[in-house]
Image (cartoon, rainbow, N blue to C red):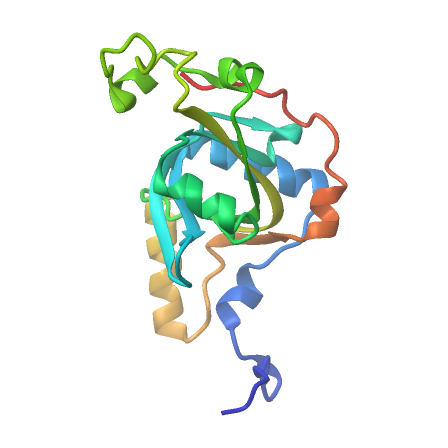
Length: 214
């Protein structure tokens, strides 16, 4: 099998769906729309490389906040959990993906993770809802409160991102898809956009003020 991927077949793109739906608007618009989508969806899948193998593991996470104008993502973690160990051993093999099942819109953010356990950061992003997941061990220390030594923060510094935002509602997409089936054309129903490492490095400005959920 060839190590190269064909990009066209004659005069036609080999991946007409991406060619029809891909767009590259100004950087701020791309970042604004990505940040808005992630904040609205809030829940996603964090994928890490296992600390003791080359296998990948994913688990659902809830966004706890953002930094750097919204492109760097914050999550809570139990410092003694498997994901914390994964990220400690393989910090650069990190991906966070988000999906809106209603519209089909999605986003994938790859980056470098860091584990933060200093009290200033933990207090900044602490939520009382963590008590439900950590429990109270009854020793006056491990109680799920803001000083519980199990609580840490995962920061994912974005290095690249790709996302797809629906252009139309369910009915509009169905109509366009039906036309495409009948005509052999590819429907323009989404906005596929990419952000590379150089573009994200330019985003050192407050497009959105940092916020904390809950």
